[in-house]
Length: 259
Image (tube, rainbow, N blue to C red; front, side, top):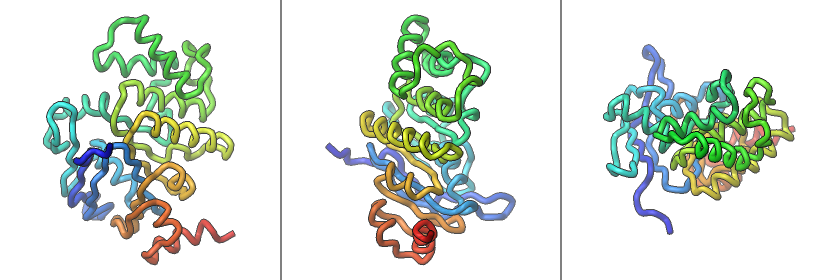
C-alpha cells in the first residue's frame, strides 16, 4: 500500500558560495519506498543539493522537511545539532563515492558495522557481533573477514562494508553520492545488483546522485535533471531517458548514445 504522505518534502531549496549560486529553486516530494535519481554533468549542483538535503550543508534558502517516526513532519534545519546527528545515525544513511570517507579505517570490518549499533544504544557484545555478521552476509562479504582491517579490502568490498554500516540501523532514507563511481565495470555491475536488491527488499527510500545514466536507469524510479544549479526536467526515469524534453536533457542522453 502506498502511503499518503511524503517522507521528505523540499521547497525553495538553494545554496550559494560567496554569491556564486550552486543550486536554487529546488522543490520536490520523496515518497516512502521511492528511489530518486539526480543526474547532470559535473558542476550542475547535484552534490551541493545532496549535501543540503542530508544535513551536511546548511542551505542558503528553502526548507527540508522529513517525516520522523516519533514527531511526524519536522523541518530538518530547525532541529538541534544533536537531533540532526541522531537522525543521521538512525533513520538516515549516507553512502559516499569514496567508501573511506564513510568508514573508520583504523578499526575492523565488524567494528565498523557494530559502532553504528552502539551509537543507537546497543551494548551486548554478542548481539552486536551477530548483527554485524548478518549484515556482512547481506552485502555478500566473507564473514570470516569480520576482524580484518578495512585497509586490506578492495574498493568494491569497502563499498559493501560502507553499505552494511549504513543499513544496520534500518534507516528509512539513504543518500548515495556516486555509489559505484571509481569501480571497474564488473565490480560496478555486481554492486548495482546488490543495491537494487537491498533497496527493494528493505523498502528503502533513496536519493542517488550520479553522472552515469545507466546507474540512474537501473536504480531510480524518478529522475531530476540538473543544469546550472536548477532542475530543468523531472519525471519517471524511463520517460526522461527515452523521451527527454529539455534541450539539456536531450544533450545529456545523446552524449551517452553517441559512440
